[in-house]
Length: 92
Image 1 (tube, rainbow, N blue to C red):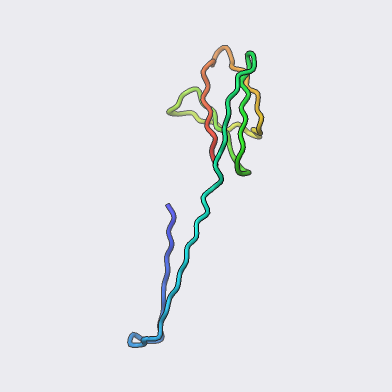
Image 2: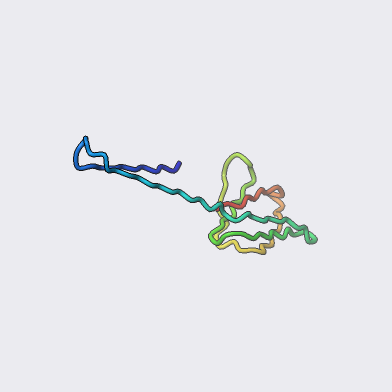
């Protein structure tokens, strides 16, 4: 949640010479591109977007999301025999 708070002060309560001009400009983040390509027995994860993106991974969509440290595009992933199902999400 973002909060913007503004206060205006006058010398006294009967003064009529106050003015206030506020402008708020937002720049939406650049869109993210995320591709998943299968190469033989490996998955090739390729993404483009802002610096500082993280790539969490999990075997369960509900819990246990873990950031892959130092993950950079492109990333080759070999599914393991004990966890052949893995989920990825790209986040800022």
